[in-house]
Amino acid sequence: MNYSSSSITNLTGEKDLIKWDPKFALGIPLIDEQHKHLVELCNKLYTEVMESRAKYGNNNNILWQNALDGTLKECVNYVTTHFSSEEKLMLHVGYEQYSEHKSRHEEFTKKILETAKGFNSMSFSDAIKFCIFLYDWVLSHIAHEDKLYVKKVVEYKKTQSQEVK
Image (tube, rainbow, N blue to C red; front, side, top):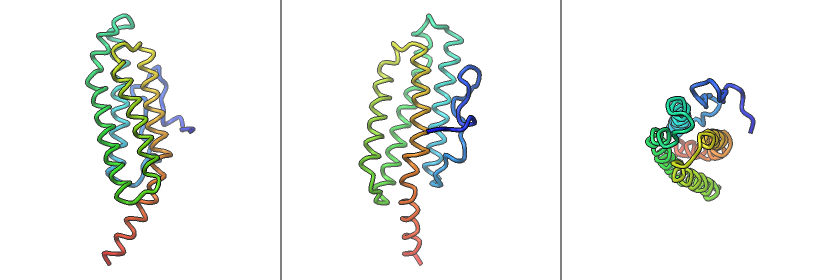
């Protein structure tokens, strides 16, 4: 998937890895707010990786890894919360591709949990690669996968509003 240059920044000097773009919005307020928060968490992790490396250098892996532990846990926990919200919504509206979407959530969750377990032995380079992986996955998932269930949510809302009339 190709994103405009406004969506990702240069890894050498920018504070944020991801810039939220209105084109990522799904039009579902709760999910859009959660997606924005996921972007904020990705940026927070990236910023802390960069700041910790500047503070502790490449040779003090334990120090910079310990500094990131809380943010990494926050990311993992919030992803679980967000996926739960999305999955409940998809079930509620009868989204036909629910199982496949849930499966992609499970694959991603497994990957980030495995990475989190090995974070204490991760090099700085691998930490940056993990941040980029988060960027790629979160934005491609929002921009493509999540947009697939929006039509079903809109249809559901339309039928609900018609039943109320």
